[in-house]
Length: 514
Image (tube, rainbow, N blue to C red; front, side):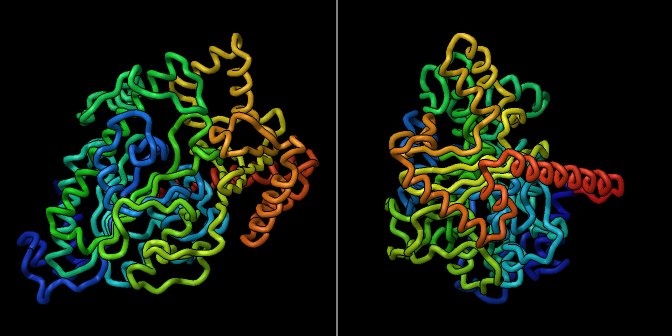
């Protein structure tokens, strides 16, 4: 209770109601003038949700996302939307800085210490009050920034309580409305991140916690296995658990939208929804495959977007979020952003040069370095893996559940699964896929002479992007056929990880970590 009261007093002070109002209640009606006609912004995110888990994006499992499907019917939906990096904190760091991870410094689970302008800081200067529900540390690029309202995982039923999201979202919006202030609210579900609903991992991690049950629980026989995974009994069980968590995410975000409607603010609020990356299963999260970065991205902007429409032409990316929202809200853009506003697309116009997307990866939550770079267009995808030397073994969260264990157990008697396990653990330096024919990236065509022209084109595109953005991996890429050059690059990467780990431990000893 004390935490909630402190948060509330900070909020009221930030929006100009002062200590007296903090003591007397939400003070609806104390605003001296009617609300200004300034655009509110509601960003909703899912945690580790594949794009094709949503009904509106072609999910083949019925009933996964009724609330998000309703939002899609009211929104412009992008078919070629990608996050920039498929891991939680760096992905959200891109949204909040408008810069690629190698330019902001948020390559892993760290914060920036430079003077890079941030989304939240500039929105505050523009007069916005700002609240966040869930994923607080992952969404705050500078530890010095204080939100006007914040509730994190432990205060939100382990980030899985639609009722608590609804309660806090509604209170925040109502107070902003009463004060005549525009708001930015970032509502981040912790679903469908592991532990999945009904799993042994959930039982172990949330033992003794009151965690809300999804409005629908899926059974193994009801689901479809993603094409990049084998159909094994244990895999089927885990995918069912995943889809139950997808449904609870939908319950949560539906509750936030209900709060917006009940506050009477839907007509003055720009709503965006996206997932921070793909599911926490092999060949999705913490990688550069299509299913790693392809995100559902919906935009509902009253009076601007047309409900139920689809953009099936343009690529948009996580680096475009900040300039787009600033453009829509009339906030001045800082210099040095890598992204570009796609506001023209929201009003039915076109934009040149949105025919491809660049994505990347640096390190896992365990600070293991597995650098990857990728360029994709509508048909093809090319991935560069400088860490792949036949010895370094890829390890990430996706291997912790039923699926990868089942794949390893099946590998000795199934050559195709054995090959998938080997590829996931060791990779190769270059991967190239015909995404029209093979969206699940099962057939590497990098050595196929029939695709040489397309491979060379994407190699050149990637090299040009790396040079333009100052990517330190460019030398390794230009010497990708030289094992010694790649080993030298990886030695520097490992030293960087050790240095970051040493600084983190030092700060922890000083009591400076969050």
